[in-house]
Image (cartoon, rainbow, N blue to C red):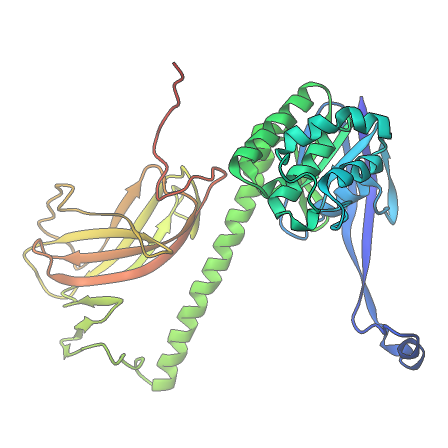
Length: 430
């Protein structure tokens, strides 16, 4: 049975650039009232069955919250139609429906009555609402004295006790402590088992995947994908992954452009930094500064990260197989050849480092130009921004060329671990 039906729904907002606020301004400056119509939903068609849990995902501004407000009939579509079957309860904005000068207890009566409960029904549910919110100590205090987490506790406790057929939630569960969030999600699963239809907007993709039967990906007001939760989330993650990758590539390109511009300005080479020491000898430059140092007997020419298909990547999914590709050039013969890599995060914490000597790989001879590949079978770093250090040096550590932060990349993951890396593990209850 379909309980929420959206058919070709369009919604626009009128954005004024310079609108008069007083009658005088409106009369004298009529031409100032320029505006633009922005369509935030474009032809959304969607059917949600009774008892389903549906997650709405997408970037900020994609229309998720607007669609949820249309479901609550707070606003109405410009075109198309929405049909709702059953009693609707919603949690859209923190503190919505609460009066700051009224106590928590008084606000329970006010908020529950908005959802259609009578005083007798609220009386019967009052103790359960207060107990679930865990606000017994503060329930007779004005809600203006509540923290954002306490607001959320009270609002959620009311919404789940009105015995609604449809529950709409917009990101509000991101507020509050971890234990109460867990309690809320357990309650939502219980309501789902009882047949309540749940539509939830969240950027917490792991929670969406864990709870929802179906996901809807909105992109610029249109339905980009709809269906199996894991598949839709994977498609969305790939899209965001590629978007971040393009941003990093553009950023990297800007740095290159600046370097080229500086070369052009100087005619030959960029100015040497005040900290750098350099000499010229047969085309080889010795450098010593915070980002690069070494004799350049062996020079690191370029570093990239590529996938199995050889495509350069600035953003990878957790679990991907990737390769750090190091291009080098030998300017003069040396007796020892050691290549190393290091990875640091955006907080300048060393996450990992190794080299060919540590791994027991003897490199007796190299070509004058060549490539060294460092293959990572499975990217296990947690989600975040990282920088690669690369070095060519002797066994005693004498640097031929050491380059810090030469390459930047992102790790994207639906799993929100903390720390540096995700360790392989399992939970066993005995």
